Length: 162
Image (cartoon, rainbow, N blue to C red; front, side, top):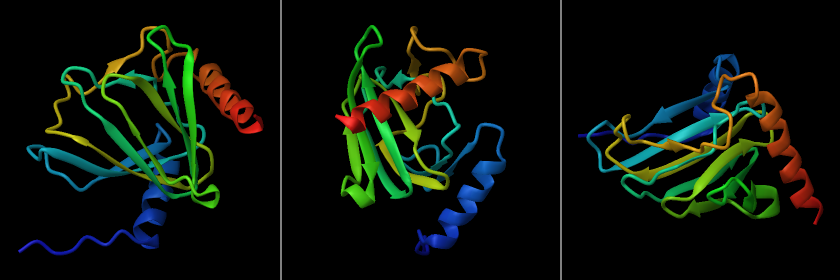
């Protein structure tokens, strides 16, 4: 018999602390096993972590994000890289989550230290087809990535002022 998995402040704090020490400044805690048909995970992301805009198109998969702690923003892009929509996820602002339609380019940003998101998408996970990176955005780890991340944060700042 499988025991309950507690999602509490201890798990979130431990995951956040390990994410801050990780070279990518983010870390997943998976609840699913590779053959599972639904991928469920916690994703601790720090504000200086860059997740290259991507989409899940082959096969087309929706992806849902819920903010459990901290704040974040999901940015959806057009096919050519123009910002189509920005949704700030922040429990203090009473916006807890978003579902990104299948095949849409998107990224998620952390907007506060210690942010943790619950993420769900169809599985099973196939690393060969998990995501298609946007051709107009720099890949993670490239020299252009930090400046692009800064620009993403600026777009969120501007959207919040409107």
